[in-house]
Image 1 (cartoon, rainbow, N blue to C red):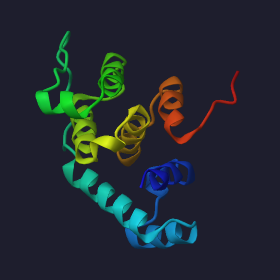
Image 2 (image 1 turned 60 degrees about the horizontal axis):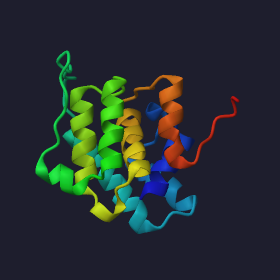
Image 3 (image 1 turned 60 degrees about the vertical axis):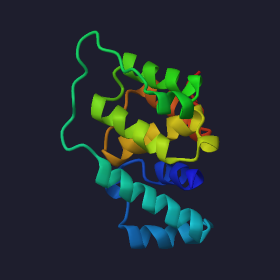
Image 4 (image 1 turned 45 degrees about the horizontal axis):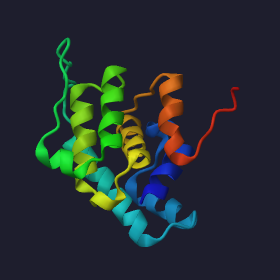
Length: 151
């Protein structure tokens, strides 16, 4: 499923150019993805769409997100640190951050690491047609093996 997400971000940098689910499924199959991975990815994206908060929430000045017990158990220290890094750099608003956490908790714990967290953040932003600044985009794109040509 994560390979499908990486492919989508690379093939359709502009989400609005992404075809409808049926046509996208055909293109993904033609690109060599397995039916199960395609179905999982499209289902995950549907859940992402249905879970999206209608209005962005602003982080209170000086506020900090505290992880509950389930989140502490399921998300590694590295992943939680990455989410706090995103908070500190205002990459996500509160509703987007909660959506990322919700989507991460829906995955099997063994699959969640910092690269998967980067990819989930990238998918949330991509699905909402939000482009992060260049340095943050570079950080997020590390999840799909992208490296900057700027040295």
